[in-house]
Amino acid sequence: MVRAARPPEPSRRRARGPVRRGAEAREPAPRAELEVDVERALGAALLGLGELLHDLGTATGALGANLEYATSADPGDPEREGALADAYRAGLELQSLVAREVAALRAGSEPRASTYRVDELVGEVARARAPVRLERAATLPPCVAEGDPEHLRAVLAHLVRSAARAGAGRVRLGLEASPTELVLELADDGRALTDEERARAFEPRGAGERAGRDGLSLYLVARQLRLMGGSIEAASAGKRGVVLTLRLPGRRVARAASTATARADASARRVLLVVDDAPAMARGIARCLRRSFDVVHVAHDLASAGRLLADPACPPTHVVCDQHLGDGDELGAAAIARWRHAHPALVRAVLLTGSDTDGLHDLPGIDHVLSKPVDPALLRELLAPPGGAPRSARPPTA
Image 1 (cartoon, rainbow, N blue to C red):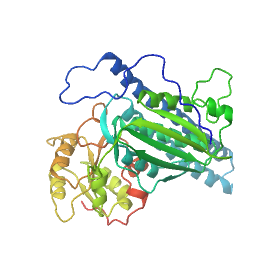
Image 2: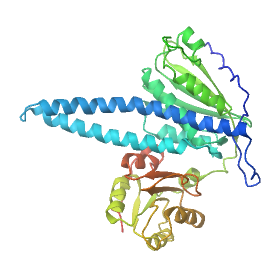
Image 3: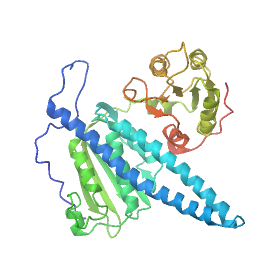
């Protein structure tokens, strides 16, 4: 198996590694570090935009073709009803695409740094909706990295879609960890790289040049990983398939140092609490999510939510809360921070808002921020149980 050389390091000198913003460092970061931080965020946003444009083209094509047929067909044409149904589904897919990608772009477009669990992120990527069948190694070593987890998520999602465009039907995700380095492997069964493509897989292409298996995207991924302090290598897996090896600075941690996902695994019962002062909105969200939970509760004010959270017999493990709950109530973001501190059973929180999301992503206790109108498919994906298996929940209780 012939391996490609690692992509060249950037010619301009830059500070490497994530920006650390601890309580002990109040002074502004050096300008070079800020520039790299911003470039990481912009690179992740660029990868997301490329995927959005590709998927929008497919969905709009399906919508246009079916609408054209339906509007020109005779009223008695038996295919007309099917075309309208397909157009309706394509319209819903467009709405879901836009909502999902806008949320991802917002989450990854601002420079942020933290310590995050890479094994949990890889598990989430493996469970997410994808154009190929995703598999993961039986065990993933507990490990952490410094930086913005959304940047690595954008890289992995882009590489999975790249494999699908190369004809892959399956992608396997693997992860190894040492005290100083993390190694992620993506092995697909798509078209193999030629020797020439492998040698130039991570180089930029000029106008008119043949771009290789997946155009410009591998160069953009390599550049993004360099900004994250890592690298990428490519190798052909025989006559069919490619193995991509990503190396990032990070470290293995003790399995006992688990975060929200590990705590959720310790409790077999999943209990959802939906908090919204609009009853129809709360009930609609509860209905959309009930198959993913064992028990679903609905509350229309913080007092009712507090009583449900304090129930020792059935404490909520997940909460979806509106930001503005009417006059007299504190904001949902403040309530979530208080709940996460007081109720250890609560392992995941989603904040909904009808206004600007700027600044909300960084608030304590909040895992995801979604803009209204909410995309039910995205919400189900964010709160899906491990493995994605649906539950048979009891009807929501108000």
